[in-house]
Structures are given as C-alpha cells and as structure tokens.
Length: 85
Image (cartoon, rainbow, N blue to C red; front, side, top):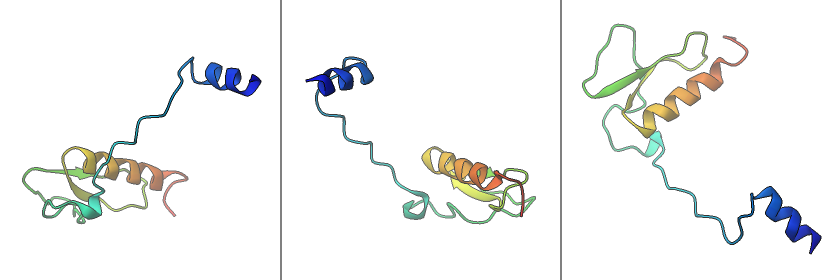
C-alpha cells in the first residue's frame, strides 16, 4: 500500500494506464523527396528547411518542415556537444 501512495505522489495523483506514445515518422522513413539529404552551402530546395549547427559533426542537411526538421535540429545539436572532432 505504501508503494501505491508513493506512486500517486510521484504521478501528481494520477492513476491508471499511461497514454500510448504518439507515432512519428522518422526522417529515413519520410516520403518527401530530398528529406535528409546533404545541403551544401549556397544550395536551395523548395519547401525544405536547411538544418546546420556550427561546430556540429553532423553536416548541414535538408529536411521537410515539421517533425523531420525538428529531428534534424536535435541530431545536429547532439553532434555539436563537445565541439567538432
């Protein structure tokens, strides 16, 4: 019983089953042409977002707007931790 009370305190009083996670398409499964391709400096692509983080080991890439661009930004940010190697 003590464990149940502790769990409720930790969950802010919430009980029951958790919601299932939201399904997202990962960029390698994206059907948008050119999503995830390298983006050389000065290049342009219609309807695409260029993700580039200074100091990142991840090269600049094109992503479609939305989830893929957020994924690319997170990937580039993580690859920038500790600077370029």
